[in-house]
Length: 254
Ligand code: OOG
Ligand code: MG
Image (cartoon, rainbow, N blue to C red; front, top):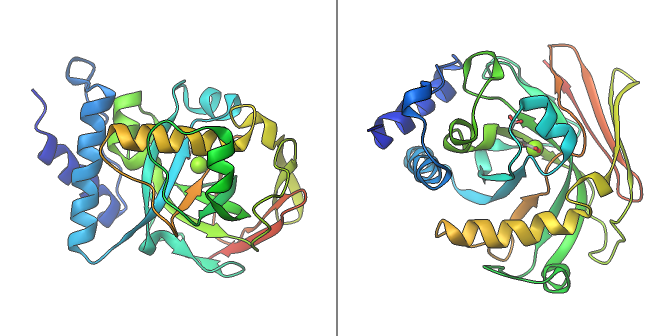
């Protein structure tokens, strides 16, 4: 049997030391429910260092993402205040192992959401929506993982930038999304690639977090999951994400 606390500790040491760790061997794989327990234990280690959970990120909500990492189920992870970076600012490459950037849509909630909710209820819980960039940094060697591995690793969460807020009733159905590096477009997609409509990612967040005993609260940030593949980052890069109707968010890598 896998020692869950030991696995959480090993993943946390990979975060703190910026050194990759091995995947669980094939004969010691854990199921999703067990992996969410490891994720929770890992977050307790972060909280013991003073970090605070400020929302969740959905993962693998688009075909492009599933294909890039070879896992085809939706996952979620916790976002902490220490992961948030200032829009337009710098991202230091040093504390990460092999960071990648991906375009996201962020929801800011004005009320809690938990369990089975309709698309209309999810929409009514919005305070605002915004363009965002997520930095993912798998703690596993070569960015390779199974479903259980990636859930235990907090769905690769590492950092994120949130752009300017738009009205909560902004139509999100089919917005063009582009990620550019040094002014050249590297990935393009549509918000429709996110489970057919990004609000479905919020519905999934309410349902999936409740199953693991976690609730979305007023003020929380929820990232919908990337609509395109993620792009590896190197020092010196200028990164910009533009989401049609929502605007831009950018940073540079140092
Ligand atoms: C897993 C996290 C996926 C997304 O937006 O789909 C994710 C990974 O790709 O490492 O954040
Ligand atoms: Mg993501």
